[in-house]
Length: 82
Image (cartoon, rainbow, N blue to C red; front, side, top):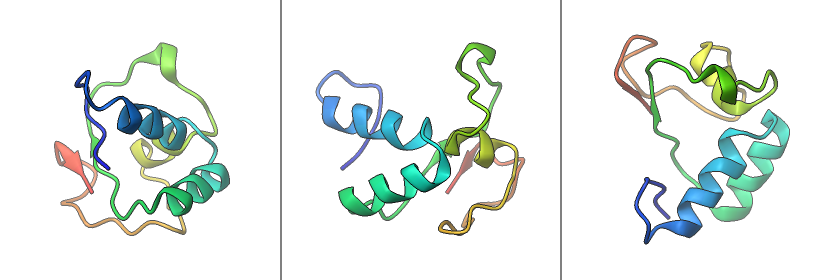
């Protein structure tokens, strides 16, 4: 499954939101249920209206360790993190 902002990828968009906006434990359960192997995240300016203190997205953007994910990218300054 791929999540991107294209109208024909509705299932992926919904899964992306369910994972990245959820607390870590819920995000992990959803990822495992959907068989997600990788998470790619754009590393850019944040929308302050979307900040959720406990979300997986914010943990990743804050460079907090997430036990069930391994950072495969070029570090915190890369445009895209994997």
